[in-house]
Image (cartoon, rainbow, N blue to C red; front, top):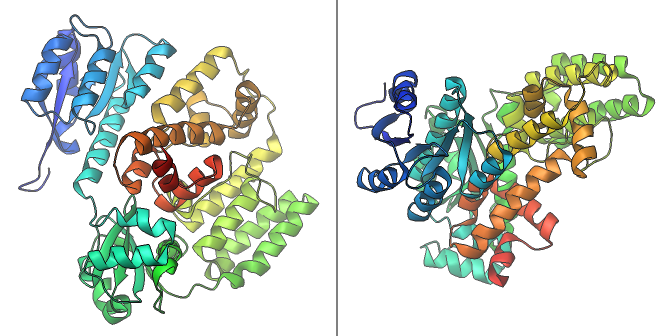
Length: 467
């Protein structure tokens, strides 16, 4: 049960089959999810009227209804409230419907008879998206200015926000909410999903280190001990954000100021040697040794390097490999902690040695199922391994066949779809960069900006200016 005073999000169910409505009402743990069914409708026109009257946050919509059909209803609801979360529940599996629904911002496409586990997962995702909008950080527009690294422009912007010092101290935190103790020392801005940056007048982290440990709701803090100024702030915040994830390697190291990247090099050199020699058994044993004896030598960044060396079976960066992890935030999202990462890498080596033998045939129907999975989930937590599980296939095999069928890699395809959505939002809305990054599927603003520039040749801010 939610605590007293908690605002429940309001749900509309629109379906011309009353049995479906009643089944949904009775089968979903609404209160546990933080939801309440505010209205039901049997046709599209009635649903449109009720959505506005009942101030609906989430709508579950059938494709084919009398009056306004489901896709038209999605379009009109999205036009009236761009933050409304839309879920399709349909008896029709045509890919064209799913593709069109994605254009209207639908976060889930459930086929009838409904899988209530899948529906609950989509509803939980809707609640997460809505909660993000509740916790919009202060000074979001500052990210746009910092990203341009123009010292005079940054100084002018900070001065307008009441921060007149020539230099500042920086920190970042990862957690359920921003840290008010750090925010009070200057300016707080959101850097991504559960990621916050702080521009402070003093080294507040060092001053409050012991007191911060007692504050609940955060996972890690990274900070710089030396003050910076102007055009250095953006890169400094990115470094603080990286350090804030050090808890991934050591759960006890929740406040990180001086990570030693060099200590892991001896381990990484050994991994590289065994990769070059194709010594898979020795590499597996080395991973066990790193897990048991070498963890203390690793930072979260060197853990990322290790992950990519092993998962791509290469000592160099191979951006055409679907196993490549592009950001620390993505690493933490996929693996949880260092020990889990090592275990999964060991299993990946075993899978790699087995190859694609005895894999089921990759039929057109399977490829369509994979494409539907991507189009329904590309704005959320999506991975090649998750897609492979949907098809009950080896992930390496799916990666190879996707590239053969689509002409590009799985990761490249997902990234393209996210960036196309980002371009539209940059050109047609005034949303801050962080909001746009989160909306299209990038949980880390720094990674979003780097990826956007890599694929388009310009930063998001430059693209917006030129549009």
